Image (cartoon, rainbow over all chains, first blue to last red; front, top):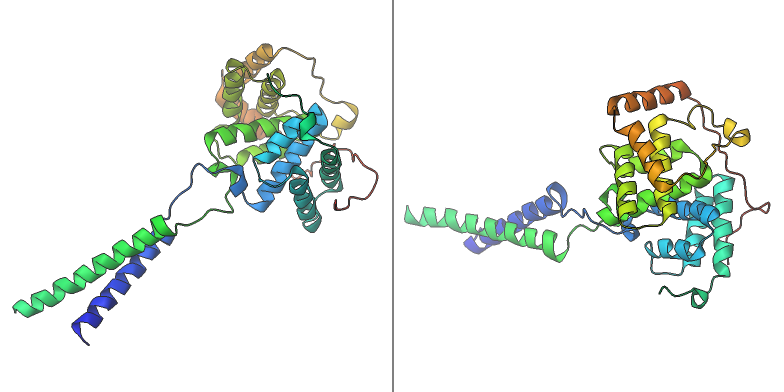
Length: 118
Length: 184
């Protein structure tokens, strides 16, 4: 085996070791993530909380601003995705109803009608 | 003899270069992406938002176990204390009174273990919230939390033990009579 071959083999071995260390042993830790990086079930539960809170405060603008933390897509799409997830994972009917209720309210929501903050 | 030493060094050099390349790739160029992160990895301000949302949702469902489960995902050292501190902070920073009240009420509920005892009672005997001011709520929460942390923990533990294997009955009533369908 030539010296260059050995050298390249050593580089390859080192790179493998470095990748293993960087990806498995000591990967980059994201300690300050945003809600949009949450796992699907946590995101769905987040939307459920928004729907539950909306039933109490009735503040659609607040619900929309809370949903905006999750995704850049429209609030209706976010709720629809959560409803689909809930249907697929056998969520309780009352929880599904909450998704549906919020989704229906959001269909009527017009951001232009929101009173701008002073 | 000299050529043998050279051979060892170039292999070591190759290994070091390889490790450096691997670390650069794994840490800088293509780091691990956390797309399925748990709530405890949230940034501090998002955690506050999460706690406030749990407290607001609790106002609707009055399901203390659910609220406790949700808060446990944040892995706070002391859930009740975190809620109390956030309520104080929210009050100091001029957040809405509703948010302060929600946080305080949830902290009090968790510290006293109410709702856990008989969720069915909630249907006929909802917890009476007599619209106290946010400040008095926080004071009540502090009184029940801070003087004897161990006592409150024991109280919660006792309440949980009392519940045992009881399956919590949800007090949430369906809002719509229609079968949920996926919005178009």
